[in-house]
Image 1 (cartoon, rainbow, N blue to C red):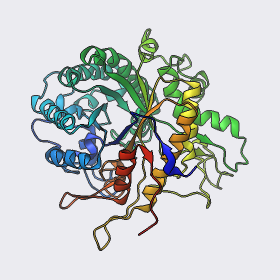
Image 2: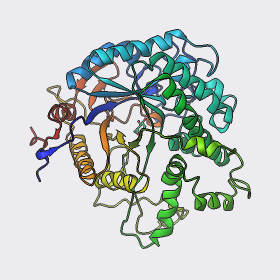
Image 3: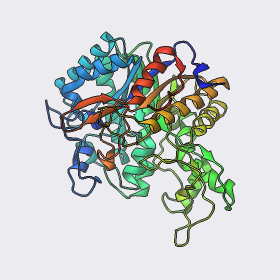
Image 4: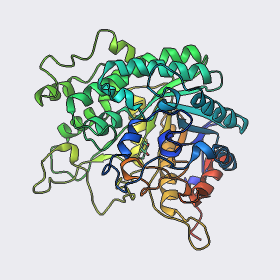
Length: 464
Ligand code: IFM
């Protein structure tokens, strides 16, 4: 069926997403404390283009204009995150009223514009003072998170009705504590396992606080997940896939859905010496019950799949986690992600059949392409437009299979600070000129506007 006939269910939530550190700037204004990303980006050599989020998109000052852009686009919902050190500069204790007031004004502005706020509490910018005490490797950080969730939801809980505790705990634990490419920049495998547990624990502990302070609200968590796709592999596929799936997906999904940490992955960690022979000693009585707290939805971030390549290249270390297939048949975005729209349908269907979340939102999906304004000022980002179109068609297919997908958020509303890549990678549907802070809707934004208005997938126009 031509995609212009693909109607989405009534009430489908159309949105766009951002995060605090990536757009706000104002890193040390109005009483905000230092975050681990402030510290990380201020350390030479950590960010590819040497940039920082000190100013970013200056959204802290330009938020009114940004809401006007959202309104012009016809967004139904906006997903953003709260900067923890803006609220609690030292991580715990004294509340910074100016920080709370900023988000309160933002929420009021969104509601006035008819845009529903979806608030993420943690999108990676931990207060540095908590990191100085060990960060997520320490159980006390999970306790601090609950205090923070309580403060924020007391203030905003009368108006915010969608809460996401964490964005991509995998990225925090693995990129931050194991691979070191993200703040706090550690290479400490045992710490990364503890961090993943304390992130999940803090989620579970925060759920009742959010429900208490925000009656009737929907509460969930967002995971980045990777569907496994058979490639032309000569390597025995099943054990490698099982391992990938265990590390990336089941490690987070299983405990959230009441199944404990996967025993095969625990055994691998014992074998590898990441944890002692008696296993996950940092998991205390009651933790798994807390993590499995009932949620109202699962947020799914999808960018690309994991596919095996057909052989291990000579000299490589035969580590299955690195075996991504790069073949001429596939397209890649500028950041190197494989473009594989079917993966979204596989992933959503698998989650539905295997874990049965009551509801799911695609809380992030998008592509980095560097297309900028042409001579006439228009940004012809055809590749992004086609990426979004094809992924939405895949999401629509999943809905047809019975998947309870309630909404879709494009990543991102605007170009922003892409972590260790700095400003070199542009994911926005809105172009940002970082010198002048001018915003220009890209062709993909104008197309998405039509999709949202018609609640159906509009076929991309022929190039002009
Ligand atoms: O920019 C990030 C975002 O912060 C988390 N999910 C992936 C995006 C693109 O890399």
